Amino acid sequence: MKENRKTILKWSQFGLTGAVALSLVACSSGSGGGAAADPDDDTPITIQYWHAHADNQMPGVEYMIEEFTKKYPHITVEPVYQGGYADLHKKLQAAVVANDVPAVTNVEVASLPNFADSGTFADLTSWIERDGTDLDDFAEGMLQAYAYDGVQYGFPLIVSTSVFVYNKTLLDELGVKPPETWDEIEDFMKKVAVIENGETKRYAFSVPGWDTWYYDPWVINGGGSILNDDHTEVTIHNPESMRYLLNFKKWQDEGYMHMGFGRGASDIMRQMFLDGQIAMVQHSSAVIKTYLENADFEVGVAFIPGDAERISNIGGAGIVMMEKAKANEKEAAWKFIEHMTSAEHNIRWAELVGYLPTRKSAFTSEEGEQYFQNQPQYAAVFDNFDSVMPRLQHPAYPEFSNVYKEVIGEMVLNGADPEPLMQDAAVKIQEILEDYR
Image 1 (cartoon, one colour):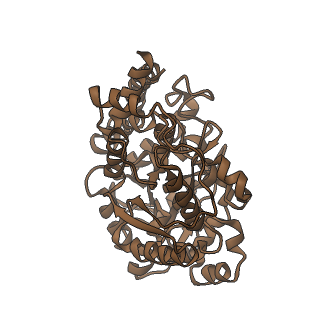
Image 2 (tube, rainbow, N blue to C red):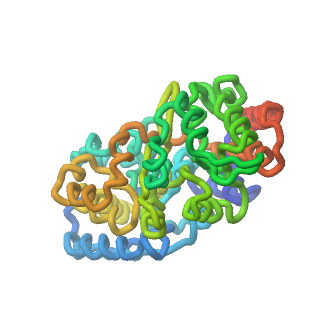
Image 3 (cartoon, helix red, strand yellow):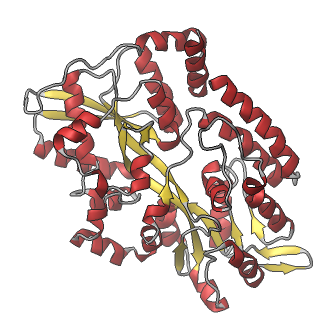
């Protein structure tokens, strides 16, 4: 019964509770896939690819499917849009319960541990070993993000990381550069921010408060952690882990730093930057193109600053195979996964969807060299490619990260002191960890 309760806790994060979750335990307890299929079998087959690709990414999806069909004319891939990540995840769970799953699907990076821990996705190891897939060609952190407990469940597909996007025209005029270390932040703020009669006319920089993805790296970069090494104890309230937050509070109170939280906060931050009210914003690399297209000044991109460490976290989604798919569907799904993440099409895919390339060999190709010539702002990411790391991999992360996000919300919206709130949050997070075990 303890295992059932554990599963209910996990699936409740996606809106599945009670009898439905218990049904999921029963449905997912078998092997699902059956014996391995013949990799050379060219019997016609149709598989579904469930995805969360936005409209502007669909030309890339269509291009990749067209190229796949040329190589494997006997395999028909039907792309099925299932909404945003939250909707897609709920539909995947319902599909498992109904025993009617797609062969291949997207999964948002922070949610992979929850699904993998519950047996939803297939272990790709046998296919990787059989076909000699060169895993070393992927950026290490990006590959690790789609593994759990030492098992490779998927590959990175639409990948982003947070970066600082800055007004290069302004910073050049001021003779300053984006800070690379925490020691440089204070001087940067004083030279860049404009404060008149206690009112901020221009903020030095902004860090989004609406998603823990943006400030989790600040925890790590300050020498702290969210959980201990074996993920049994919460540590986000420890002094090392609180360094970033106490600095954020200080810098906001002094008028140097901006943070947004709540509905519309992303659009507001972006517009303030374009209007010159913020000199530098931390945002997803996926929206660099948007800034380039809309700014009336030169845009620069910098990796976020560090102290004890200097990392950023992976965002976006990967591509995985469903464990309960039939054997011949899995074989077709594997071929599609390999194709979608291949070095051959990596640069073209990145250009079409606006996300990052993931294959190292693609960077040095002719297409890769042209990519960086056309979009030199992305060099800041690839200069730090091996410092783009997975998010915290714990099945309960989607649940307990919301607890400490509320602390940020109280600080940003109500000016609350985050220190006692984070102490209270740590108690709640520890309860979630205990319940999960």
